[in-house]
Length: 489
Image 1 (cartoon, one colour):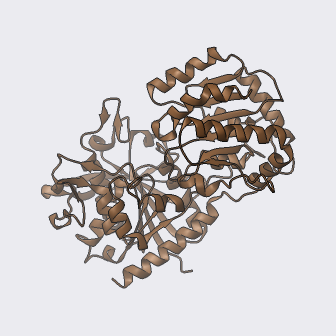
Image 2: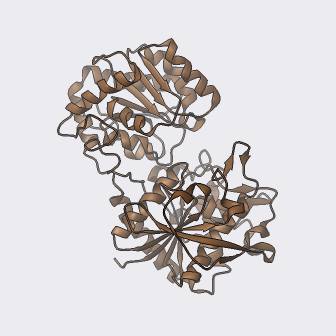
Image 3: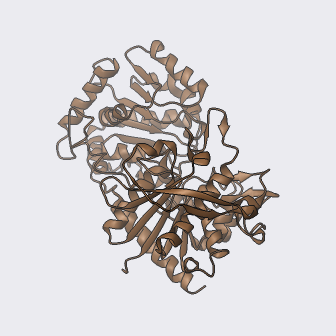
C-alpha cells in the first residue's frame, strides 16, 4: 500500500498525559503506523504535566484564529514518542493548558473547555501550514478534537488541507462535548455548521455529533461496540445519526503494548512464565498471597479486579454479590479507586474477610501487573465497555476473564464450551447479582473440577495475538479507504 502522511490529533497521549484508553491508543498506534512506513505526526496540548519531558522549542509563535476575530498565539514544543522517532508537537498556551488537570480539577470540569479544545483543533491545522506539511488523512479522537473535520470542510476547504480525509475514532460515546451556554462562534467554525446536520444539539453544542457528520469515516474500538452504539439503549442520544452513517462506521479492536505486558519479561514480576512453562504463574500466585496477606492456599482460586470503582464497571453489582461469591471458598483481590461509597464498602471487606479478601484502594501499576499474573480469574462485569484493556492483559497472563458480553469484552473473550474445553473465559449477559454469581460459580467449578480444560484455556488465551500490529494494519486500510472517498467528494 502507498505510504501516507497522517496527522494524529489527541487531547492525551501516553506517557505524557492520559486519563484512560484514549491516551493508551494515542501513545501506541502512531508508533506501529510509522513502523509500517507512514509519516505520522502527533499534536496535543502542552499541559503542565508534559513539561517535564525532554523537548525542543520552536522560535516562531503559532497564530490560531478563533471566533470573534480572536487570534490566540501558541508556543510549540517538539518531542518524540518514547522508543520511536514519531514527532509529537505540544501546543503551549499557559492560560488554557497550564493547569493541574487535563479536563477539570476537584471543582469540576473547566468552564472554558470549549475554547481550550477549539484551540487544539484549529491549532493542529495551523501547525500544518506553519510546517508546510499537509497530511493525506487527519485522525481525530473523541469530542476534544471532533471539530477538526468541520474545519477541514469549511474554513480549510480551499487550502491544501482541504484535500485531507478525516477519521474520527470514538473511544467512549458517553463523553460528547456538550455545551449549553457557550456561544458557537467561540469555536471559529462558521455558523452554517450549527445545524441539526452538524454541531447543533437541542439548541446547544455537541462536538462529537458534529464530528460524526463531518468526518469522512468513523470508527470505534471494537466491532460489537460499533453495533451497540447504533441502538437506542447504548446510543447515548446519537444512535440515529450513527445509524444514518452506519455504512461509514467501523470497529477496530485496540491492541496492547506486548513489551510492557509480557509475563515472560515483566519487570514487576519476580516469577516469569509463558504458555509453555506455567510454573512461574503458580509461584506468582503464592507471591501475591504473601504480598497481600492472604492465606497461603493452593486449593482456592484467586478472583481479582483492577478497575475504576464506577457504575460503568458494574461495581454496584459486584458489591451486591460478593458475599455469595465468597461462599464458594475463593480469595478476592481488588485494586482501584473511584466512587466514595465503593471505596468505603470494599475497603471494609478487608476486616470482614481477613486472609481471604484484600481490597487496595489505590492506583498501583506494579501491583496491577502482579495481580494479573498471580490471579486465576479476572472479573469484568461492565455495563458497557467500548474495548477494555484489562481483559486483554488477563488473557496475556493466563488469568481467565469472567466478563459481561458487551463491547470489546464480547469480542476478545471466547466463551468456555464444556463439551470440548474450547474458549478463553466465561461470559454472561444479564447484569444482575444472580447472573454474576452463577457465572462466577461456573468458572470456579471449572477451575476445581475440570483442571484439564482450565489449563488448556490458559494456554490458548496466552497464545493469542494482542499486539498493535493487527490493529495498525486495519487502520491503514481505513485510512486508504477514507483518502479514496475524499478524492471523489
